[in-house]
Image (cartoon, rainbow, N blue to C red):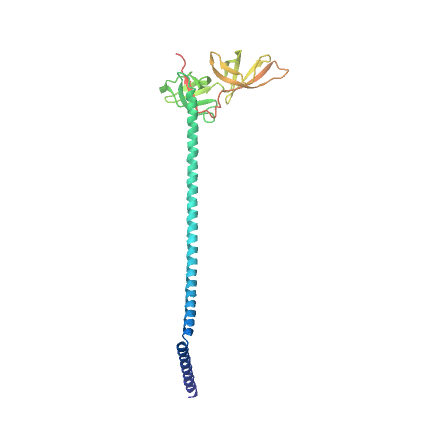
Length: 265
């Protein structure tokens, strides 16, 4: 019985306190309006501050999300541009090759021998037998065994050894062990060129033979065609001969085009 009575009295005290507090607030706001204005302003400022803080947080989150999205987009765009640049560089490299090929072809055509048949080398040493070319012109072009093979209109490199319908095999004069009669230098000194392979030759000449690096050798019977040029010479005081080394008119490993001149029937 004692505890319920105490609880009831405590509730009455709370109600009386709340009543006096409400009455005090009412009298204060009625008697002093400025107090109400200041209270309202404080509440309003607190609300605005809370609202701004919320919006600021949301804006910061939105800006962060936008930054990450933009960064990913830039990375993807950069990767795409890098791939395009790589592709364009490859295409430009291909164009440079075509331009160079075209220039070489024009140069070869400008040196074409009258009556010569222009052709491309489709296989060379390391693929074919040493010091032979496989060319893309043959019997249907009128090519026959023994026809002359030129590097250009005044440089000869070999002869046609075998013919096929649309191709032919050319044997170079520089074939190892092959000998060719030639005339050396401005005095047309008779010599015998011996093939060393790979477009190189050697000749044994008397010590008193006047020979200089750069002198040209032409084939006997066809003096209009240069077959090789002197690149070095070797001699010893005890020898009666000097060795003279020659190089053919082209690098047989890089050559791309030739001309074939038919032999007179």
